[in-house]
Picture 1 (spheres, helix red, strand yellow):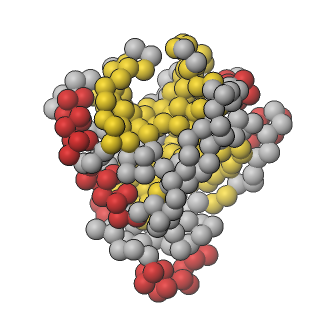
Picture 2 (tube, one colour):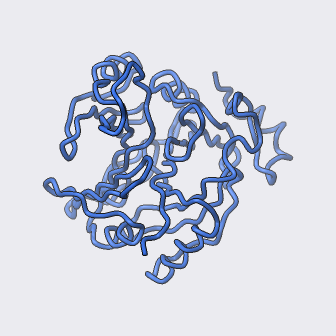
Length: 301
């Protein structure tokens, strides 16, 4: 029986400029800032969350913006691109908007027969907007959520095995790229694996994806995934309380950090849905640092 994976939950990257990152995702991409909090392990650094109007899992991109952080270098063992779904017929709108937002390297492309735009965010992190046939063409050009991620690996075999255990199925091959797709996922249904054994190993920095999170419904489902991954020989953490979801982590043999996160309790657990992301929210263990952090953290627009 396939594991109870629902699709992608969120993707988290590193950045070098809190204000620039915030401006790009809110004004450039039109996503909502749904949470401003801090890194659990390094509270002097923001953890910023962006998503759709209702902060739904599967729509969320998050950042650790370390001011002045050097850019990472691309290679194997990383998420090399993140794709969002947009309505069919909206690419002309997005091409103009991305240009006005200062996105780099905006160009038309096609992935496994789907039209899209590739572009670079402020730290040269790679993104795609992909037309999704499952979205009705309308005047609404909003980003509908995550479509998928691309992993660049020296060897895709072990990661493909994990994805298959998660319930993903082989959905095609283009050159050295193999597509895995999760049937019946609401969003975030695609993981593309690129085999690139000659490439150097990636070095993490600004513009690098820190981890990719897959969603499950609740702790019981998460425990099923954890048990299955342990049985496959993965070194999986215990459950970690992230306030808005519960998480487990393991680093795949290919080098990419996977998280498995629950859908609840959700981003409205500590503030009203109408006012998400407007004020700094702190994990309980860092609440005593509020005065210092509010003085040190770069104010956001």
